[in-house]
Length: 277
Image (cartoon, rainbow, N blue to C red):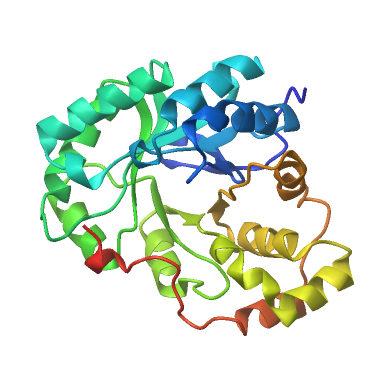
């Protein structure tokens, strides 16, 4: 078992760090999550991203325990779902997530979506601030927030989100949002980093994979790392889990990056944040 994280780490607000490459477990069934997480941690991952919505927090927690990796070497993220917005409800949702994980704290707690039609994300954020003040979430952040959501949050609260986790891949590079995040000291984290695998059929990526002796997925994950994104690819296949971590032994040059930039189309695999919740 790896004793140290293989991924580089990036700084978070407050002097903390986050492993730049982690394991996503969206659509991993709870019954299989323990083995998936254990395999990943044994391979060298030290960052696992789950959510209440995924209904696999219990399996994730069991996988952490089975791995034998000390808790202080791990970075665990979970999220509050749209149906638990509001101060008191978010506090209860967090307690329930901790209980399912079997942990006394998480390293990052996120508002999963702004759910603008509810218009309660500022209230929910205040609950996250209270959780952070208690030390039960080491860092707090948001997911799927656009600049106008963040503008409102920043003017109505005392803590800037450490992370904004958004859909981001070569079709949707989110340059303007990444620039906004960077200007405000918010780290950008990519979900659906491979566009749910759909982008991998690109001839451009096939050519770069051949050039570097890598897979198309490894090319895209390397692109994320060089952009400065945190990235959380999902897989349940042990070979693919290990392959996704093996992206630190090569570098994309400027021409490679230009080629990937040509794939930008604005196409999403999920809903726009203003249309969700």
